[in-house]
Length: 290
Ligand SMILES: O=P(O)(O)O[C@@H]1C[C@H](O)[C@@H](CO)O1
Image (cartoon, rainbow, N blue to C red):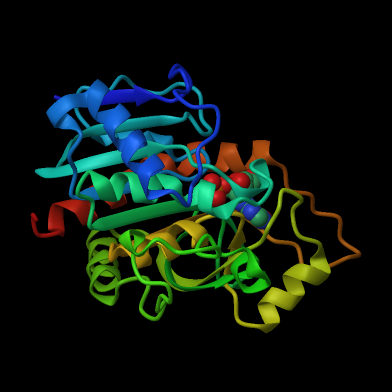
C-alpha cells in the first residue's frame, strides 16, 4: 500500500533546519518514519518537475492529481515491483534565497530511506534547433551555473557522513541508464534525445542573448533546477537518470518577442505529462530490481 506525506499539512517541528547538519537530517528522516512507519523505504527516488507530478499516479492507490504544478508531497509505493519514493514537487533555489543545500536536502532524506537510484525530471526550454515542443531529453551532462559561481550545495564545512568533500561529477547521468532509456524510447516510438541541460538561477526567464550564449557553449535545454539535486546525489553515491520535458522553445532573437510564462510551461507539461509518465514506467519495468 502506498503512503502519502503532504508537506503542506505537516507542522514544522523546528523553526529552522540547518541543511548542513547531519543531526537535522536524521531528525527529518525520523519524523517521516513516525508517519510512514516501515513503508518509508525505497530503492528508487523520483523527483517530479514542474507539472510532472502525475508521475506519482503510476503508484497504485494514489488519488489522481487535478491541479498541475508542485504539490509538496512525498509518496512511497511500488512501481513495476520497485520500492519507490516520489517527490511531487521540489524546492527551487530562487524560492529559498539560493540556499542550494536546503533545496537539495530532500535527496539526502530519501537516501536515508535506502534510495540508490534517482530519476529526476524537469520542465525546460529547448535550445537545440532539432527540439520540438513536447520532446523529451535525457540529460547527458549539465552546466551548473550557480554551482560554478560558488553556490554549490556542497560549499561550507562538510560532514563526512554526507559523503566526500570533493565530489566527481563525471558520468553523473549514468550511461547504462541512458542506454536503457533510449531503448525504451525506441520501443515506445517516442521522440527522446540526449543533451546538455543548463541550470540558470531564475526566476526570470533567460534573455535571447543569454540563450544564444548557452547555445554557443553547447547547451541543448535550459531550466532552473536539477543540478543541485544531482550534485548531492552523486555525493551520496546515488546513480542518476535525468530527463527534461521541452515545454517551450527558448527564443534566440531579440527582435522577435516570444514570451514564455510559467502557465505555458505547466500547460505543456500537462499536455505531455502522460507520455512522460509512460516513458518512466517503461524504464522502471526494464530496470533490474534491487
Ligand atoms: O521544477 P522545474 O525545473 O521543472 O521547473 C521549471 C523551472 C522553473 O522553476 C519553472 C519555470 O516555468 O519551471
